[in-house]
Figure 1: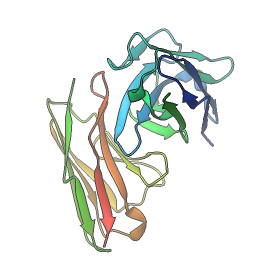
Figure 2: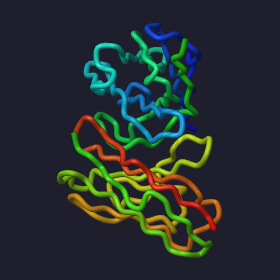
Figure 3: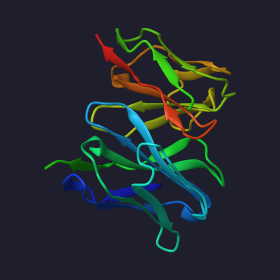
Length: 121
Length: 107
């Protein structure tokens, strides 16, 4: 059974930093691209970032480019999102998402339960 | 960036009724369009991939169609458990984008 378990969310002041982690199990982690998608309270889904299966290629939405860094450790089956210079508008539930096709970006077949990040003074 | 629009924004439906949700892309995306269901306080769940391909474990009353710029999600014979917000998503080109969602409420 595929499981994606996020951790690391919490309350942080504007300008602060936070690192999210996503522990993956139930599939060959190193074969799949992974993504972060966020959802502000009461709002829709917003695509944040992607990383290829071997970590060699990354993508960021304009809204987070230069502030967030996605990475992965395939030896630990773990995905990360390092967030810095956080703003109030970054407040959201952050979902760790598994890509559905090995080797390239496609649909999202499994989502974690999400971790809430609140940016407030 | 490819913009996805959905209609309607909200639909209140009686059980056993048929529901049709449309998703329109700002440019052609072939069949790289996927549908998700999100129930309150839950994570999104994949319903349909590549416009019309079914997903194991998803009830057969959910179906998708379309290509290019116009897509449709159909729920045949709506059940109470289908109350949720439905999102379309394109994977044709980065940045991947989502539609704004369609909330389906049960009368």
